[in-house]
Structures are given as C-alpha cells and as structure tokens.
Length: 464
Image 1 (cartoon, rainbow, N blue to C red):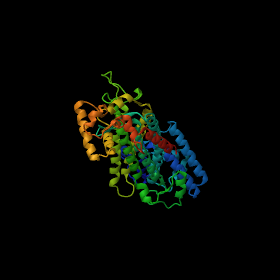
Image 2: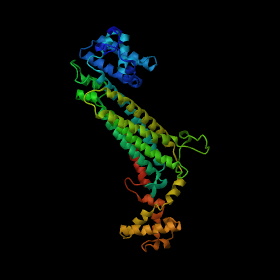
Image 3: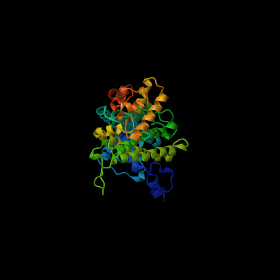
Image 4: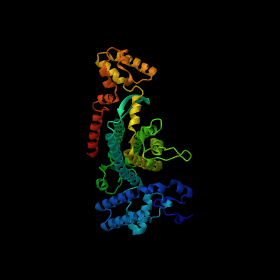
C-alpha cells in the first residue's frame, strides 16, 4: 500500500501502512469521550482567541475558527454529527470536521497545543461542570434531611451500638448524623474542585511550546484560577480524577450506610419507617411484598464506585512521566462514577423528604432493651455513688428485669430499691424515654431542643 492510500490521520505522515482495523477500534476512545464535546469546543475557542491576541492567527482566521466550532456544536446537539472511529477521539473528530467546513484555516487551530494538554484541559472542564451539578444535588439532599429531621425532632426511637438497643434518641438526631456525613462529603468535593481548577492548556505534548502563547489568558477565558505550573505534570497526572473518585467512594459509603438502615427499618421486624410506593417494587410471586429497591441499589452501586477508585489508582501507579496511552483508561471509570453518584443523589434527594416515621413503633422499640439503663446509672452517680458501683447496681437491676420480663421504667419503687437504698421516687423522671432524651441537652445532643437548634445552624450554613 502506498503512502497516498493510507487513510488520512493528523499524525499519519511518518507511517508506511494503515492502522490495523482491530487496533483502530481497540485504541479509539470516541465511543465514550464524545460526551466532552462541549468542553473540547470551549477550550478550542479560548485557544483560538489567545492565538489571535498573540499574533499567531489573524482576526479573520480566529473568527472563522470560532464560527466553525460553534456550528459544529449546534450540529452535535441537534444530532446531525457523525462520529468516526477512524478519527479516534472527540478532539480529532471535531478538528477534522472544522477543517472540512472552513478549509485550511481549520488546520491552524492546533498550533501551540497537543492532544495531551487538550485532553487534560477537557477532562478538568468536564469534571468541574459535573462537580457543580453534583454539589447542587448534594445540597438538595441535605435540605431534605434537615426538613425531615426538624419534623421528627421529638420522635423517639432506639439508638443502637452493635445493632443492640443502647440509649433512646430522636429520629431527628439520627437524621442529622446522616447530614453531618454528607456535609463532610460536600466539603471534600469543594476541595477537589479547587485543586482541579488549574489550566493545563499550553503545556503542549510535555515541554511547552515555542509559540508566544499567553497561558494566563486561556486560563482566565476558561474560568480557571490559574495555569498549571509544570508542563510535564500538566499532561501526565490525573490525581484530580482520583481525588474525585475518592470523594465519590466516601459519599457512596455514607449513602450505603443510610441505605442499609432504611432497608432494616422498612422490614416487618423493625417497621420504623415507610418509603413511598414510587421508590419501591413488588414481587412477581409474593403479592404482599414491598421491596426497598432504591436503597438496595444504592447500597449495591457503592461497589462499582469503589472499584473505579482502585482502577484509577492502579492506572496511575506505574506510569513514567509524561503522557502515556494508559491514561485513555481514566475516562470510563470517571464517567461512570459521575453518572452513578448523580443518579444515587437524585434518588435519595427525591425519596428522603417523603419518608414517613412510624412513631408509635419507634417509641415501643425504644422501651425495649433497657435503653434507659445508663440514665439510671447517671442518677445514682448524682446521688453520690461511684460510677463503677452504679454500673454494677444497674446491671443487677437489668438482670432482674430480664428474669421478670420488665423494663426498668415498669418496675415499682420497691423493686428498684432492693438494688440501692439511694433510689427514690424521682428516679422515674429519668427512666422515661422523654426524660432520657431531654437530659442530653447540650451541643450535639439528642434533646429535641438541640436537634431544632442544629437544624437551624445547618440550614443557615447551607444558605450561606
């Protein structure tokens, strides 16, 4: 095959035979990176604007390039653009179409840049846009949690350790624990956005370019805080994608924990909450079933997101500087993590405000398991008995309750006094569930007044 018969590629000048058909498909990324078309065009417009300002392009060439790119974007968004595997990726597809449309001027667009810094810029732009969408959805979920927590500030339920009844708490307090986990996730996401918001454009292949480019201008045009500081690092690292994936794994872990509790709480054995029918499914054989499929799927999808984090870490760990083709494998894990996180947040943000607490069932469950035992111990300490002695006294009273099938609050004063003469009638003020939760009246405590105050503080912070 002669050189003239080789399919045209921007890099084909030094090759003497055409790319193998399988290799062409194997090495192409267009099937998944075409989703970055908007960022690719935005980056190219900024690059062309800068090239004209420094005198590499004239005004007519700049305007022709920008008009051509904008027309290509309209075609893509209207479904009138044919993506070619032969052209490998989103960058070469758009550049080839631009040259076809405006002629030789289209070939000048790539002056002073490489696909290496181009893709690094596109990914940062794309991820930044997605982070902003995810941030908004995460805040929507947090707002829903605050509303539900405020509604249930005095709804009493059992608190657990080791999944055993520990102490009574309020449902609102429990929901605020979910909120705090998500709040840390939100902070991590904003930190990630700040670190990725540097512009690699101008790093070219790895060493920069001989053209008199203005990297500060392109960074400003694209909304970056500044240009990246080292051309080698600019094109070769994907730690910003790894950092996002680490955020995603932690977020999904927190959503998975919440999902696990919802799965438990909706079971007949707990019956603490009801999920709206639109977030559940039935059984093909058991007509009584109402399955919490949304929480179960969120719990399950955590595994794929965790897997993507490991994939990206492994992808990066052995690469010498600078760019390597390995980095093409960064996109599918990153894109799937983004899609999964957005879907799971949307599901939770839609579902959480519609959760209904079965208050009576929660209250009855809190009465079981001697959940006010610690309150009795604290009561005895206030009577002057050392805590360790109080602990033993309460342990004996619990053993008595187990043998006689009585909760502490159900025992008579005479029954309780057999374990300590210090116990008086006022003990029943602390053995009630209401007394127990109200006594935790401090910052971060489960008292209803503290739950309402925490909701107010959190709501103010979200709106800031």
